[in-house]
Image (cartoon, rainbow, N blue to C red; front, side, top):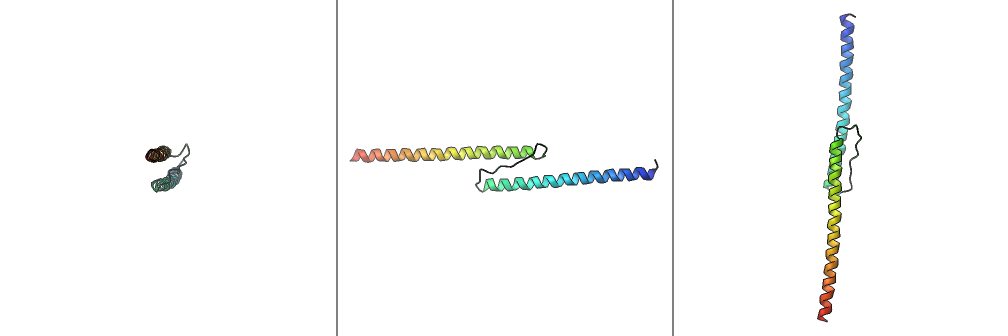
Length: 103
């Protein structure tokens, strides 16, 4: 093998590596934009938003963590609403009791 063919093979290999990393970078950028949109939705008050990730995604740990936070926030919101409803029922019962005692 002469030097020219070796250099041609090296150049082709380098180009393939560059193309591979460019496609990988574009995919990660796309995933990050999806994550950013999901975070904006959660921030604006949509606790039902989840981020989907494939097992092979580089951002899967971040996606799973965001989903965990969203689930915890949603359960806390549900618990808070239930507490508010129980408090309202209690106050209604107490108010009714006080009214009956005065009559």
